[in-house]
Image (cartoon, rainbow over the protein chains, first blue to last red):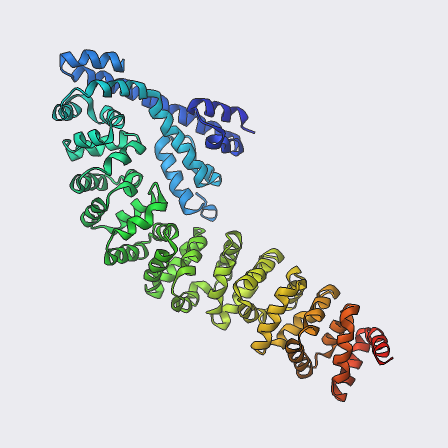
Length: 73
Length: 483
């Protein structure tokens, strides 16, 4: 029923059948919105982390900020 | 959410946790309710895992780099540069012992923000190593922010001193009920409750009943060991009748009969009478949903002793409400009576059934099975209620009557009371139809019984057998026995 959404969710979360297989049995619209919400959640977190990394690195003392920028960059 | 379709308590908690995690208004998480708590939990855990795995390598590298920094200095950098989000990620990649040593040096308000950003499984390892005072201070900040879901994520990982420190500092028992409701590892609730002194536990449970937090209180009862479940259920049962009447309304409206029945199953039976005779329990719709849940959740055996404690008026309502659920539920109720040794309750209820309901019972497959029929008849004999049972036998199919014949004719102690009841109730027609349905190998026993009857009884049975159209069969056996 929602094979495509389930496949996408497996790929997005690097999850197995046991973890997300039940999505196949959800109403189509619910499954799609859930996928979108999870995608947005991960995207939002990625953006927030980028921002916090830039902010944090800039506040580190000079010798440390270079190393931190390199490993977190 | 539609109240009629409210999911079980663990699923409700998981729905709220998922809604909080994905922070989306576009998806109605209640549409996921049918997926159940386990599926939702696995989904939530995979979202979390993905969220941390995606950035793990970066923070592992940062952690390696920070190993050379003194702990005090790193703690200062956490506050002045990294901030709660990066610090939460960083601490999760540390050895838990070093992580705990650094965390001890951080202010409580900073930790309250960082803990929400850290990987749950890693945090659980670290907080077990932290002093109770730090845990208490952070917990009090989270309480002030209403962060019960977050607190529930780690509550069961706390040490005993930390749990006591937090419980001692939180005066509002409803907070503790909320946290327990969202606890990540509910299987650990027994251990957690045992760490709290008995008086406080009693106060917490009473708060659940007084502040309309029944779902939260029932969630605790439903997730602790059977022994503790009984103890907590007893505390709730000691409340005023008006409060308990409120529970019935909530259990009915929110589909909470499962936890209620499981709690009552372990409760001291001395409270049964008080609870089952509450005003709200007399409502047919309430009892119908209770019976249905008991059937759906395999709790009929737990429900039957409760019915025993009801007054006659209650028996009548339960009897009709049960039969309204259909033959499948009725069959299951009788098997529950058989398995739990509760035929006496069935007889209490059976006396209130109308003709159509009695016909339905008489047609159930369980009554064509020798073992339950023998046990039922034995209870009816012991309680001198064979006449009631005969009315059901009268309504049975020939196959059912054949089983009755086999059971009665195999045991004189059962047969004699049946004949006594037939005589007292002028129910020879039922006995005649039972004998007429007997298999050939048991018919000779029926003939012997016939022969030893008094003249008066024999005449009545003969007339009834002729009336029932089974006399020819009995007469043939009589002749062959005589020959």
